[in-house]
Amino acid sequence: MEVLITADRIQARVEELATEIVCAYDGKPVTVVGILTGCLVFTADLIRRINLPLRVAFITASSYRGETVVPGRLEIRDELLPDITGRHILLLDDILDTGKTLTRVVAHLIDRGAASVKVGVLLRKIGRQEVPFEPDFVGFTIPDKFVVGYGLDFNDEYRHLPFVGVLLSGE
Ligand code: 5GP
Ligand code: MG
Image (cartoon, rainbow, N blue to C red; front, side):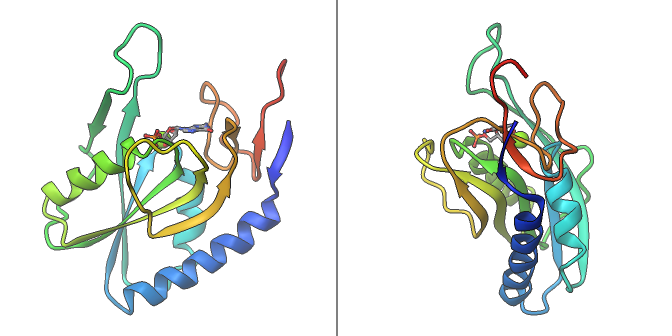
């Protein structure tokens, strides 16, 4: 495993993001919506630093990248989502890659009656975006490498690592 972003750097950046978010919402109540499961660690760390009236909810978005299913299809599940009508949403995900997931989920939340949707991602991959999409809060931009840790998985492993790393072949 090659460490790309250390735990200390992540914690320092999450602190800065929290400050940016508090300024942007200027005292307005916010509903944080995390995209499971990758958002888990980022969401837990970030919300504890956001000093605003705040609710937390989750949504699931799974893209099928396997060989047997249609590539690029995305299934959004929102059974866990409370009524968000008129609420200001801060949508959180682990990583912005092609942009398809976030584009679709933002549209879904607007459809469900959100008053506004801002988007925060821990990571943004350079050179991978396929649809135009500008997140409001970005932790780090990273090169086009497959990363794990701090919520990000490979086959559901490695999410618990406190840093972001790149798997070396053979691991
Ligand atoms: P997008 O729809 O932007 O292409 O994909 C976003 C999703 O793809 C992320 O939420 C994440 O689940 C997955 N993903 C994209 N790049 C990586 C990566 O480098 N590592 C891991 N573990 N997941 C990734
Ligand atoms: Mg994801």
